[in-house]
Image 1 (cartoon, rainbow, N blue to C red):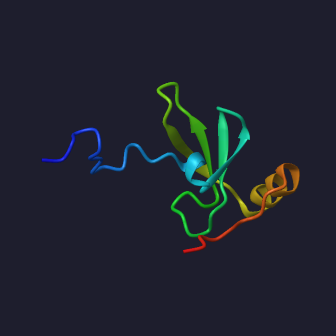
Image 2 (cartoon, helix red, strand yellow):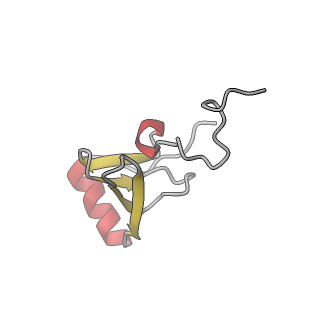
Image 3 (cartoon, rainbow, N blue to C red):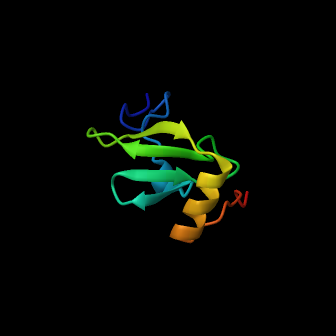
Length: 80
């Protein structure tokens, strides 16, 4: 039988920042989805007090572009 801590059927241990799918713009508070191949692409996320990243809203194209210029990131794609 599998160890209960290694089983995560709901994907609750997924950390979008650690995976590189999102980029923090205000450390430990706000992040932006930058991986075009990931589910949070173009979304603004905030870090809930329980430590989970929560999607807040979809960014407009202009907001995403402005944030990319300010924080020096570009959209990227998985290399897989």
